[in-house]
Length: 299
Image (cartoon, rainbow, N blue to C red; front, side, top):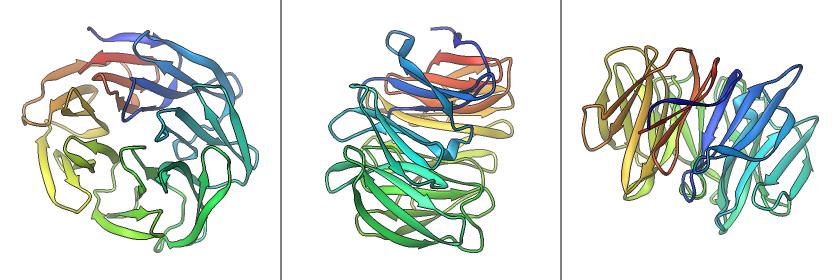
């Protein structure tokens, strides 16, 4: 399909499900407050009512699937963590104001990973996404930087108990195993935006800009594919659609999409507005959050 506008407005964040039906969630600047909204990409329509007073910082909300297939969004607001099941409309709240939120699987159950800083010696709380109960809690060393300017990488439920702690001022990404309560790996980082994506053959992959390339790397640290780009790389996204690993990147105002089996882009999509965030869905739909609307294109 050609590039189209799903909704008007200034969108600052977007995420898509890493498995199951092609669903997305966005944050948008509203009049006086941000708004969160879920979308069904099959019908090109809003899924449920908008969420008012939604966070304007991407690190403060997370979207994905639970192991039972239910789509959930978690966010912080006024010293509370909110978890909304979009399939039923059921919502739970837990006291707390974490600096970072992500989703993971803990003991076979969906979990919200909350990182409390801003001290370098941070606290990680793993909450049951269904009940809000604390499943485990442990400390993590954030080095010489705090939770500020960090974000959590996840691809729930495909990434299982693994989440990544990324920072735009550091050259490593700490991969945490929330079941083992420890850092499972330390992966090299360019300091640019990175995403954790399902791997087509099993384990998740880290996808991030690296110089003039978009690099995919296994969570074991092995370089998998290097995709050359013709200019400066902004936001990146990745997904498995139809058994293929698709990778997308904003390169100088143009969106490039690769079937990762080839170093030649399979699609180029020029955009008239700045891209703030990018996502790829499980049906190959490319979703761009821009200053001039939520824009869609087929990969």
